[in-house]
Amino acid sequence: MERPVGEVSYVRATLSGLGLTLKHLVNPHKVTVQYPDERWDISPRWRGTHRMLTTEDGKAKCVACGLCPTVCPANCIKLVPGEDEAGNRYPLVFEIDEFRCIFCGYCQEVCPEEAIHMGRHYENAEYSRDKFVYDLERLTAQTHPVSELWDPADPRGE
Image (cartoon, rainbow, N blue to C red):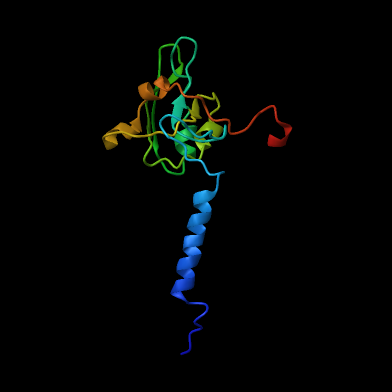
């Protein structure tokens, strides 16, 4: 079997790779971001770590309707509803397993009370796996900005 020497030459491939490396080396437009000190600007629609919004008195806005665990394709939301003496529903247990989550944003879209939101936080580092199960206390303690999956005032979003 004849192999064309011009197409499979190792010298040509090596010189081509070195030329590409030299081109990237002298390109003044490429800048390295010094990560902890500088950060990339992420999109306002970035879907990161979850956040539970609260009412004025500090309680979670969630009414334990059960839509978010129903719609979740990864089955990562655990919800146990409860009811107080006045008949108001609230979550007894609300947990999100961030390892199982695929960050699709369905929970935010389906929530009738707009209680659960995807945040714009992306630095998820912990020392143990059990810290990635976010309970209601941790979800309400999140303070990062929330994701803007759509702008209700924008007519193109309808």
